[in-house]
Length: 136
Image (tube, rainbow, N blue to C red; front, side):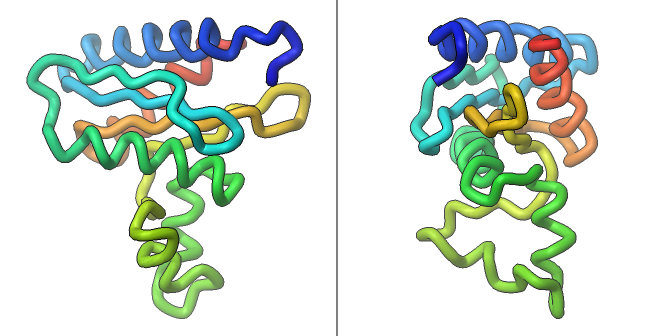
């Protein structure tokens, strides 16, 4: 729970900023926000986004919370011989090990996660970061 108790309001603000960035770069995205328990709080599928992105974005948000790190960081650790090699097959396949998911941190504590999917990994990360930046 955030200090103000308005996590849904925060999620809406993040999703709006992320969607604006997606429109700016002309890539339709799916944006998902979950709470600290990995429970979905907000789901936004932009028109013409990839159907596969619905599951991917949701799982990126979940992975960011479950592993307490960005999914891009998990990617490095999940490589063969990495400390988390094999993690992608854990948790019923929910772990996503490529960029586009970030934990949402308030006062040094993870309060949720944002996951974005629909473009390249770099585009997904840019759009997710725009969502996080809306909270600054």
